[in-house]
Image 1: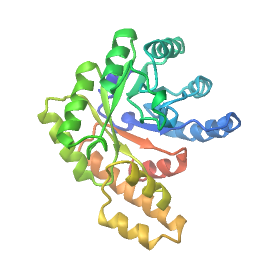
Image 2: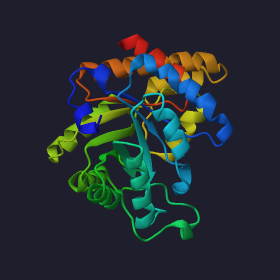
Image 3: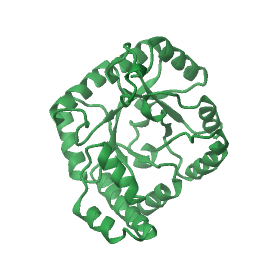
Length: 283
């Protein structure tokens, strides 16, 4: 089912999705497939598969096939900063040969080796337009409730998002956030900008201090005081921190649902049980 159809549903249970990432080693694929099968009880709208970090490499078509064989609707990511048009076209053709219907279009991180950057695509809106003109895929793009870390302001970032929407995107999946007020303000700003596209809340359960340190270092993400306090409180007790993280995300998602969020997308970090526990708390 394409994104445009998924987000027409009124029941939030039909608009829940999950992100996973490819293991570095092929030998770890079976373990991931076993983990992913745990999501079947939730009947996800789709599972998204990340593109390899750093702007180069590719998400495994073998893994796409394996996940699809489990009767999941899979949405691969694709980054363009290190790709030529011919490479992207080949990728699109391969996806369509697998009957993939959706794709998440991203610029990708600028690689440390600038020689890896190609000149065909500099921004995500260029990739969206290319996909729209060369496939029948439904396209999701990223949104940033607190602004992209490379943007000079939230206004500039929303202007860039509008370019992606105008190029043909069908859904916006946001970066993770922990303060719902930031998300609600973001939605308000997008609607005032004339963006009517579904805005899907990106949720990342708190799993560890290391995870939070990394995410706040790489992106604009505000930590509410209660999160800061519990990170300190449970700094020597990982299991208690994870229990707090489940409770916090459960309350966060419940509030979003009560506020008529258009969808929930869980960044699982390949830890399915945590997301399942959160959803069992609220559905």
